[in-house]
View 1 (cartoon, helix red, strand yellow):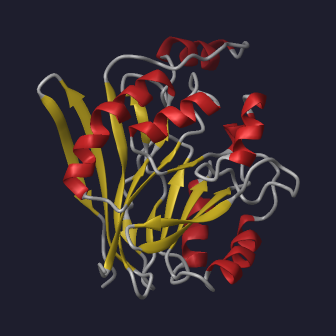
View 2: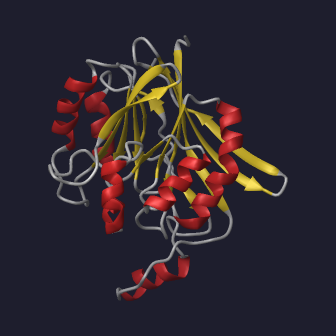
Length: 278
């Protein structure tokens, strides 16, 4: 039995460009990192906002083991029943009781059980329940089964994401930020052993505004009039992080952020190791 659990986490998948980029790059990334489990945030996979049952199933066929979401999970009402029925897709755990789906679950990661928790921030976001109190309650239950806990913290404010990382340092194996679609350069292992990054980035068109068509977003900012945003197409990238976790202690051993670009001759990739505690 391996002493390390290897996790590959892909940032928000945005529209068709993001889905196609994942399809092209994931076999290469699996060969490169040999992950025990692949997790991705899929809340923007359907046209740039929302997710459908059909698209979720497609992404799982590409090799994603667990899909997390966020505030856009509710865009397509037809997906509500799927959130209840499919255990491999999560929505933020701190939505009020009665919301469709589940906010956390335990999945096999190689030969070890890994708890994956989906939480939403509250600053500039929906007025959901407190994520700090939510994680306390979840950890009380989860840690009876496994010390391996990864959190997708779906937040707008970088300060809230960082505060959450510090709050759970030593109690969670990894806190991976999502939602802003901009990969941050602060991947590190916090002093008590939690791997952290404020935002893992996105899987989508590079020539865009957070995955949406540039002209539409610029028009919105210039005129302040209603504009329907559409997911951008063109040159795509897959961004995310690779995390190694000690299987016994649950402490992270390393975090590495990456960007993979599908090209005609193969996949080009850039990586950078996160900081380790002194």
